[in-house]
Amino acid sequence: MEKKRWDCTALPKGWKMEEVTRKSGLSAGKSDVYYFSPSGKKFRSKPQLARYLGNQMDLSSFDFRTGKMLMSKLNKNRQRLRYDNNSQNKGKPDLNTSLPVRQTASIFKQPVTKVTNHPNNKVKTDPQKAVDQPRQLFWEKKLSGLNAYDIAEELVKTMELPKGLQGVGPGCTDKTLLSAIASALHTSAAPITGQLSAAVEKNPGVWLNTAQPLCKAFIVTDEDIRWFHRRGA
Amino acid sequence: MEKKRWDCTALPKGWKMEEVTRKSGLSAGKSDVYYFSPSGKKFRSKPQLARYLGNQMDLSSFDFRTGKMLMSKLNKNRQRLRYDNNSQNKGKPDLNTSLPVRQTASIFKQPVTKVTNHPNNKVKTDPQKAVDQPRQLFWEKKLSGLNAYDIAEELVKTMELPKGLQGVGPGCTDKTLLSAIASALHTSAAPITGQLSAAVEKNPGVWLNTAQPLCKAFIVTDEDIRWFHRRGA
DNA sequence: CGGAGTGATCGG
DNA sequence: CCGATCACTCCG
Image 1 (cartoon, rainbow over the protein chains, first blue to last red):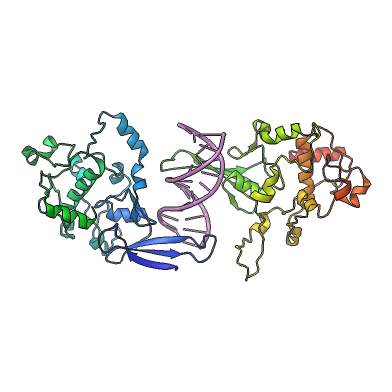
Image 2 (cartoon, rainbow over the protein chains, first blue to last red; image 1 turned 180 degrees about the vertical axis):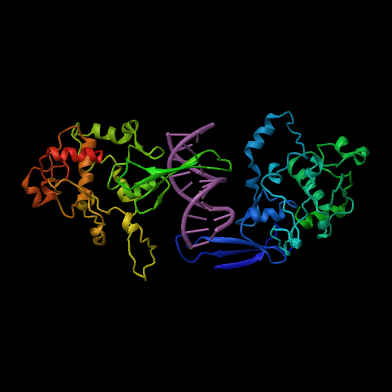
């Protein structure tokens, strides 16, 4: 029992994880965990994994070693929590600026990689990456004007979402929509209704209700519920 | 000024210390102190350091962070002092059983590591350790029959000690002698004379004067005093 | 697999 | 709350 490899259900379909036990040296008996994308690319650490998946799913509660979402990680980011408790937003988190992920992460810790295959470009290119790489879309970025959107990525795999759900704002796609809703469910105990005002479609920057995720108002059907359950959401 | 490395005069010759400031993360700005043995082995904590040096020198007043002997630490070990005060040995500590280091340490907290390089032996080996590791000799162990002495260590660096000083008992070497004398100076205000009885050489276990360190009677010369001063003793 | 660098935990 | 210790991560 030194080497196992199996599906990681906490990650999107097709991702596998593997555990390899060290055989010798000072660290004999310890093990290393690796992940493999559907295309076979190997990931050796959580930061490396987050650079690929961080924008399409929340990995803050993901435990790299076990491959599961750990509730114990939800209480972290204590500095931020302390800050939020002292603010005037008690009990009413701004879902568009207080994600369970560090906000700074998208700006400072997760470099926006320019994916290109131009021969003169010195940036390392990884053809496989174009397949695995989630869109660089990040809905906060849209609002702040930091647009890392790459239209070449538009063709990347589409997300499966109920038809009743529609995003709001420029460049809002299924992927950012999923983030927004998941985050809202994650952060708030209040009902999630979406953006009720019709005006938000005209000028999202002005009419945005920050207590609701960036999606249009929607009706949850029984079919939607079954769908969510199947996804483990 | 993030990384410095210099000689640590409070430790034996050749030991260096280093301070490294953490650059990132939640603990950015904090610093870590490391020590390096003459052979380059890195030590990351006082307990770890004490496992190597604790048998040959008293680290109870050694401040790991600053690398200096702190007078403020001399008042510690209160439980032991209280015990000694209640015993019948008031003002006359038994120098052979009440070291300034915890006695239990040598038995329970400091595992006696079997150093071997036999290929069939599964115990992890560390060739470098044979150089750094002080002898496992501990004069109490000699008396109690717990002998972890490794004759392979016999060739390890010799200690520089005045010729007038000679140890008493089986397996007593310069290293244990140094411990004994340093401890005696440290613990007792009474004069250190050594073992005055000639009988102690015949049967140390029976004739031992426990109020004196395990060394033969000696005469301190002016040259000896200069030597001690040079060593910082 | 090693090891520097950082996080997690515990005791005071 | 803080510092000391130790476990662990992550990348070479």
